[in-house]
Length: 449
Ligand SMILES: [Fe+2]
Image 1 (cartoon, rainbow, N blue to C red):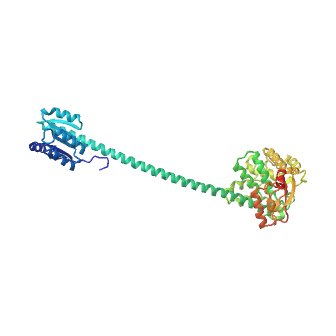
Image 2: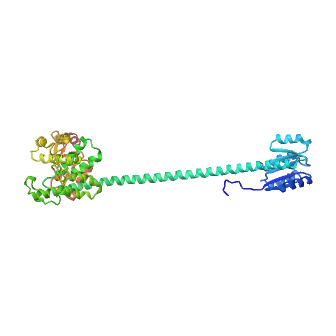
Image 3: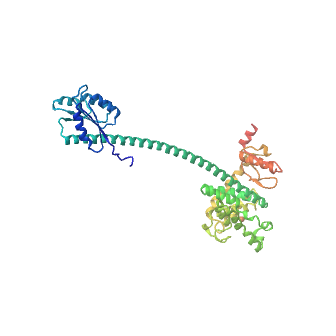
């Protein structure tokens, strides 16, 4: 049986009359009815004693005229003992007033007259029993609803707590993940920097080449309004674009393309594929590998390795190609006139070799970088040891470690991090000379103050 079904329990019926014959007659009448458990008493006092032991009594039928205690008085006291019992008064015609009083004082379900009609009495008691059962059922259901409500509230409370606990665990994990992700990104940038250092070390003939290119790419990417991720990838590709030259005979790399034999040129051209292959093993670097592969494609489709044409060449590759060619042109001229001459030299390359859409970004970007370097006329120069470095000082020349690894490019402005890195490197691989720095007027004033 489920909790919601009513159990078919016996209903206790208490019959009270001072005349034993009447209680016997009533007992006989009700005994045959299924689910009735009949109790009898012959005075109000006895009935109250019996009721104390049977407070779950469902129906009470009492005579009115009894010695010692009237039916009305008995029923009044019975109400305190068994408030839910349905009470009935059995009266003679002469007791109408008493019946009205009992009803008015409350608590009487019905009054019945003597002599009674058996069927009418059975019917009246059946209705009283049904009424009692209904009240009990109502009470049971109310208790059940209350209990379920309490359980639901408790369950909700526990669920809420669990959600809060899990949310805070997820938040902690997410913070942990974000932190480790940021550490990973930092390590990633540091690895790319380290690889760039290796490339520089290998190509002593073009010191700072990759870093100069990535510096120019940074300015171009900003001017082209590329998103942050794209900018980072292109700058990294600029740093790594010639990584495939590691492993190519140094004798070949020392020659200009025009001086190479067909066999040497063939080998030289493999550096773009070797470069891509080297970094393609790292899934996060695959886009960068694509840019590295195509940095010698020409806009007219006559480049290598795949002869891609126009916008089929990745944007990063087109930008590296332009920055690369500009950087080579720069080296042909004395420093004072290199910028204008190199830009003029490039004029014929926009279209056949370089993407004309990048021209403004490159020309303005190159001028921006040079303008920042030319501020030196307003400032003073000084040779300082790593210990004497201060934030705001600007490198006059490229800074190399004792064994020739490029640490910082000329024009870099020192901050706390780069000063720390420079001092650490000085301990590992000491420089031969002090560092030539430019001190801007504000920095110089601060220094002398
Ligand atoms: Fe190259």
